Length: 68
Image (cartoon, rainbow, N blue to C red; front, side):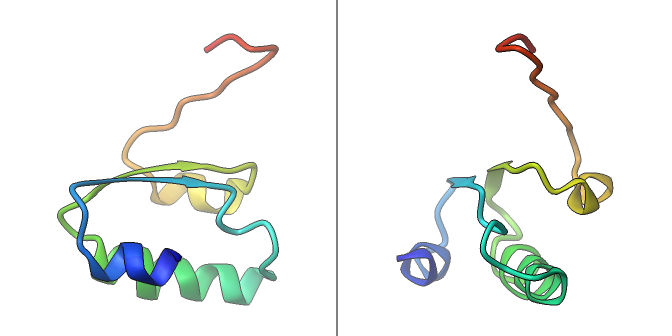
């Protein structure tokens, strides 16, 4: 399902925990090869608890106890 979404080149995409079942190397590969390469003109909202990718983000929103 995710591959179809990426190849359809959407304007917006919401990814909820896309790195959950990937190890660090796989997650990095997915981020660089799929998200950065194929979704260049796409607004990508990625919900994750992986802080490794926070430095690569344009905007970071932090929620704590249901508050922004």
